[in-house]
Image (cartoon, rainbow, N blue to C red; front, side):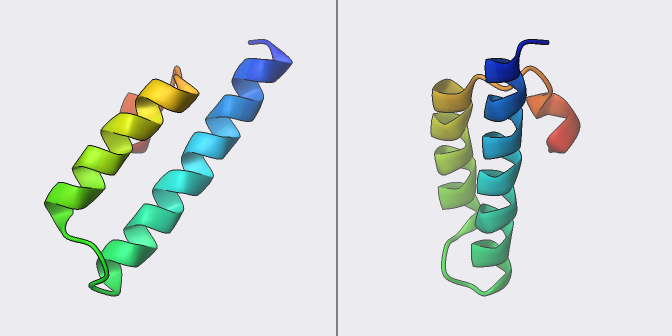
Length: 53
């Protein structure tokens, strides 16, 4: 795995963690989380995305 891919994995994991926090606080809905996560997967292209969900 390249340094760029590792960086993208970390950025995706941080973004997912923040989304989960927003969901827990009621600031976003589950459908919003799923849509934002889809967009994040396109941006970060994490190879391990399926493991995180």
